[in-house]
Amino acid sequence: MEPQDLRYHKEHEWIRVEGNKATLGISNFAQDALGDVVFIDLPEVGVSLAADAELGEVESTKATSTIYSPVTGAVVQVNQELEEHPEFLNQDPYGRGWIAVLELSNPVEIDGLMTAEQYEAFLTSEE
Amino acid sequence: MNETPLTQTHRAHKAKLVDFAGWLMPMQYTGVLDEYHAVRKGAGLFDVSHMGRLKVTGAQAEDFLQWISTNDVSRLALGQAQYSMVCQESGGILDDIFIYKTGETEFLVCVNASNRMKILEWFQTHQQAKFHQVFIRDQSAELAQLAIQGPSSQSLLKKVLGSVVDILKPRQCLPIQANEFSGLLSRTGYTGEIGYEWYLPAGEAQLAWTQLLQAGEDDQIKPAGLGARDLLRLDVGYLLYGNDMDEQTSPLEAGAEWVVGWNKGLFQGQPALLKQKERGVTQKLVGFEMLERGVPRHDMEILKNGEKVGHVTSGNFSPILQKGIGLGALPPALGEEGVLLEINIRGKSVPAKVAKLPFYKRRKA
Image 1 (cartoon, rainbow over the protein chains, first blue to last red):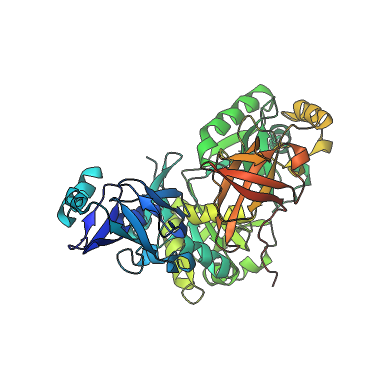
Image 2 (tube, rainbow over the protein chains, first blue to last red):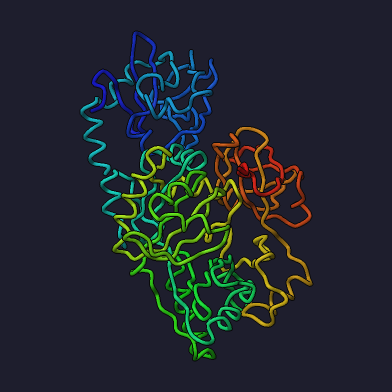
């Protein structure tokens, strides 16, 4: 079961909206598919990203994967703790494994993202 | 898809199963890093039954293997194992193999899963051509193959097989008949740790697996999958067929001249290899390590001052060294230890340098 209060992106990122800010990370499905993460390239604070633009990269013992920004916005905070503890991405993808906080430029984009229920259906259809 | 005698067990362990050379094999159980560290610190138990196992017997068995493989089989005493390669006439590698001398006229040859049918046919063709006193039997289905690897592997195996385990020195093997178990036990592996491989009747595999895991509870033995195996072998610079070498690569180019028995007389591929040795190779496999953050991967470009000079054959992040490491094919002049290079990681040139192999050496007790 995916957390109900989040929205989900087709590239398997999640986003939690609070006012005009949004915290994002990768979904449980994504961390499981990636395998053990050995490090992450975080975006820089201040960078503006378009929806679906590359936000960072994660290296796992299996492969390199790109993380996409589900929405348009500016990076206002990144989870520096992940540099020391990339395993948080695997252990707690919706909690301590959060990646960045964006300031939303176009909050209506949120409506275009999947709800938990839709995301679960999406995962089933992708299998 | 082929399954091993242990596939059901892997399912019960909730392993992630993947297609590996037509075999349904465990990529990981609890997690690649977890399993990797278990092998470096305690022990890991691997099902490697997907490998091919060919028995070569008969009065001409040794002559046949001398002809078909690059290493000098006559240097093998009874109960010894040897790493070797099978080359075609051009010198290109058909497979890298392990040969176990299990009797005066009896050998077990372990081949890669992906090359099993090719090697079986290659062996049969050459046997029919000039080695009529040789019998080749594919024992892959009747035998299972386990690898027990890590500093605790010896004490653990002893609990299951008894003190016979203590007799084995590196690259030795012996037939076992202990408790309800049999087969051939060898002190070999693909991880850079003290370790064993056990070739046993398929029917005994399940019980052996269970007993080894039980024996290991204090020693932290964990089932380990192909993901951990690949990281472990790269730490010590062991080659992976299909990545680090193929039919277009010779043993000299693969940095494995030590498996070529130059003095043993004529063998398959020898004239081509000799010519290559005289002329010199144009590229050679070397190890390199990243000097900045970045993980090299198979097929990435290796650059020198921005110019492409080679390519990465294997690459990953070494959990124990905490940096990216890899093997790559380079012109020999650039293969000297310490030479500065760059790896083209998705358009970014990340500095690296040629490093001495193995990247990781286990601490001797």
